[in-house]
Length: 422
Image (tube, rainbow, N blue to C red; front, side):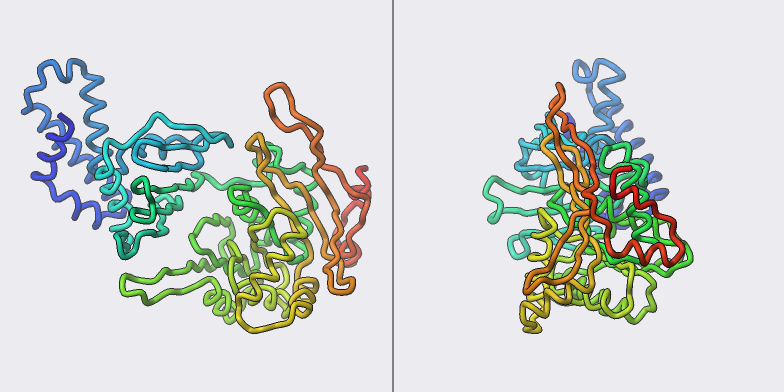
């Protein structure tokens, strides 16, 4: 029945053209209203005896056809669920979701691989992208900013697969992260001091640990009178300041040309008189350009790196710098890292699904060929409660970072008791 209605709808309306051309929310609402009327007209002409016995079932049929014709089919309900943060389609009949930090199997499925491919085409076509045997994987972004990664056969052996990391509908602030248990009010205040004092900060963490969310919160600590340049692979940052320029990378086009990388944009933003440079993630030779910017007067820069500890972050940065292909010796790279970066904030996703800052670490110089690190605050896990949630507390190590004197000299009032747990 639903298939017949969908076919009749395609005959009446050029949905593919309409969908590709309409990106404005108001125009899309008009198109959806027209489509809904067309569906109802088709339903009224169908012999629905015994098929749609109630008004509720009829409304459900209209919704499903609209989702299939104009939306992303069975994924629409998951996208509308604010508690769902990630959607992982392993195969057309196996869709996992992350809900409140926990991964679980959803009851939602695609009716066929063809239906799934139709949804994939609906994602990539308005972006001028394609996914086929020649280009079997693609990164894209939905209208709401959610990130999508798609892989199709022959690379994906069980059929098309896609992963959607949803974009939050509102900007989280420090109070939200305190409420989530990601950090305490004292740590939030300390990090605000660090941003205002123009320290160079790297947020380290694994996939899904909350690095981008924390980067967004810290970036919003930047004073409103400063010029901020952001560089991202996929625009996710939601800064509240007005003096801001947002730059986003561009993938290769269908002909394999026109790519613009993070490194290209970092080099360009240095010519744009930035007070602050915020890079969504350093993942290649752009790390070297970022470190050199930090070392040449662009204090107060922020970025993230994929790594599982502050010590591992140093090694990761060294590897990324080598990817720049300049041929710097290892010691020179380590000296660059040591002089450029003030603190590393380590954020991890714990076993209960919660995201927490587990260490704030100062880079205190070099000892031989080793970058010396000193923890300022650490999270100590003390067990699990009856609901298997992590129990723990944030504790200072007693170490007073060397930049505190500079903060005090500039007029900042920061209690040294903070570093002693007082």
